[in-house]
Image 1 (cartoon, rainbow, N blue to C red):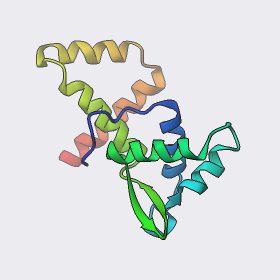
Image 2: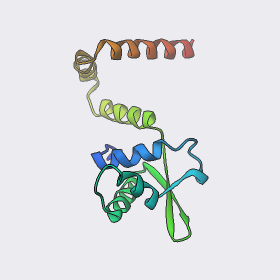
Image 3: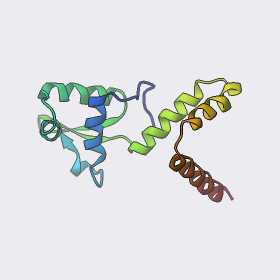
Image 4: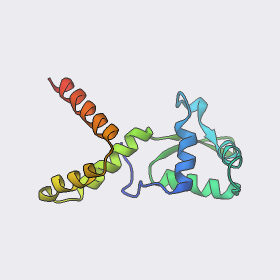
Length: 133
């Protein structure tokens, strides 16, 4: 997955990506136009069409969405799933830590994890180990 180092999402970017991630299945025929995204967002917040257009352009430049021409309009699809983006951001964060500090950073992160999050982590590790066996 090619994505910019600036892939972290702001509030409005996240709201737009949530609409795109909801496309099921994410096929070119199901891609959303700026108008469709704006109409969906404007049900819960006062937002200008041009603002949505600008944010989608920024998301395209970040490598988070792809766009295709449809007449005079653009249609957008997410480049990856929400889970893939989250994994990328976690990996990017770990890649910027000295290997000697990586374990300490993980322990600090896990110190604030809930019991359910720890259970999810254990289950994910068990699944990974079974795939590698």
